[in-house]
Amino acid sequence: MANIDPATLHSLNTTADIVTTLITSNTSQLAAFAGGCFWGMEHLFRRHFDIPHQILDVKVGYANGNSNVYSPSYESVCTGNTNCAETVLISYIPENITYGDLTNFFFHIHDPTTLNKQGPDNVGTQYRSGIYYTTPEQQQIASDLKRLVQEEWLPNDTVVTEIEPLLSFYDAEPYHQLYLEINENGYHCPSHYLRDTPGH
Image (cartoon, rainbow, N blue to C red; front, side, top):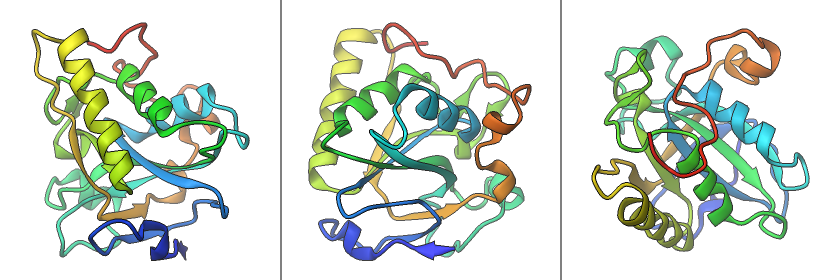
């Protein structure tokens, strides 16, 4: 695996540990979203956005686990002991798609009101709803959109999406990458679909 140059995250007041084969360019930026099983999240982002014009690449992996966790396996993440979130890491072209567009889409393809859960089968901290920003601008956009979703679309529920800096990301095993592209009849979380408005 290749390490993304930490300079990519230069504006974060932290040292991120990112180990991935994600394709990047001199003009691409990173976005990271967690919203349940990463198979469905990756599938929807790939199907909705133009690759490689808007999105250059997408990888599924494990993000923001405990500080003592390095390169976890799927089996260890499933125990709940790593505190990693199943996450999609996206390399996007900001000239062709905005971070706000990606984040808005994220709120439309999963249920942001269920704590550590998506659908009937995805239960545990690894399935939490999260936005992991890489710049202060991303943090502001994510916070503003979360507030909008809460106040305008889900005033009677609590949006539990966490918004935190991207501290770590490790590619998931190769068989998880492009899973639903390769296995059309594979497991589809019933919470993963494009809604008209953010909600359940």
